[in-house]
Structures are given as C-alpha cells and as structure tokens.
Image (tube, rainbow, N blue to C red; front, side, top):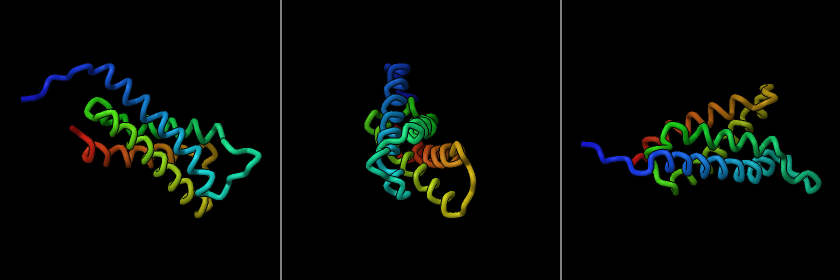
Length: 121
C-alpha cells in the first residue's frame, strides 16, 4: 500500500536545512536588487537573510518528509522569490509591516501549499 519510509528523521533534517539555507541566500541576493535598495556600502542585510531562512522553513514545512533533497533546494529558492515579490507589493501599496511577517508567512505558506502538489513523491 505505502512505501516504507527510509531515513525519515535524517531526510526531514536535511530537507529543512537545504531549504532554509537556500531561502536565506536567495533572499539576501535578490531582494535588495529587486526593491532597488542595494548599495555597495551595506551589501548584505542580516535581517533579510534571517527572513529568507524563515521563509525557506515555512515553504518546506508541509512536505519535508515527502520530497527529495533537490526539491527542497528549489522550494527554498522559490519561497524566497515569493517573499521578495510580496515585499515589493507591500512597498508599492505603502503597507507598514516592520518585521515583514505577512510576506514571510503568506508567501512561504502559499508556495509551500503549491509545492506539495508539485514535488511530492
């Protein structure tokens, strides 16, 4: 009926780690350039990296035990892009969210829900 789970906890830890790290890397590289906030003095924003890590974790939470590591890599990267897009929408409509909780959880949750159907084994 169901395939037996092999290395369940190790797979969950690996997928969470991959998605979180890719979310942080992509967010810190893409968001400042997309929102035109990039400067050569302050190149990397630690708050953006932390938010990217969180959005990577939110994105992969619903499917972390049912996907392959390459899919966790993509889910975290695309989750950071959803986060960046929603940050742009909030800035465009002048919505005040100092900790960016809405783009984190809405973007990551929406993409994570879609990712289950796309990447589930």
